[in-house]
Structures are given as structure tokens and as C-alpha cells.
Image (cartoon, rainbow, N blue to C red; front, side, top):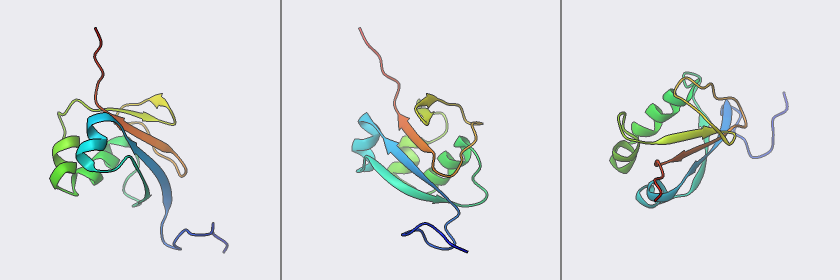
Length: 97
């Protein structure tokens, strides 16, 4: 069976995750590619996977923290499904004056 170049044979679904504003600063990165485990099917599952990394991840993305998310540039909620090739963005709420 053929697979895209550069992708491990057992990687499953690959997504791109973007971090903006204070999240980017506290996590020390603006983007990453993640091979999703089969159990992670939605945005809530992805957030739990990232929180499990501990440290700044746990602090910045913990349940109850005011973090917004978008899937493929559309605002999303925890039950939004994630598919292979999706782009997920996490960012703090923005206030203006």
C-alpha cells in the first residue's frame, strides 16, 4: 500500500495545529504537525491530548481556560470532528475597545 512521502506507515491522520498570540508565546511554537491517535476524533479529544503533555500545555489549554478554536478557518466547538489534513487553530479570546 502506498503512502505519502515523509509520513510514517503507522501515523494515521495527520493534522496541522496552529497556536496564536499568548498561546504561541507560552508554548514556544506557532505550529506543528500531529499524527492523531485513532481515539482522537474531535476537537475536545485533541485538546485533551495536548493538555496531557503537561507543563505549559496543561496550563494554557486546560478545560475551563478561555481558548477559542477553529477547524479549517471556521470557528469550532469541542464536538467538531477532525479529519486527515485538517488545520486546527487555537487562540485566546480577543477583546477590543
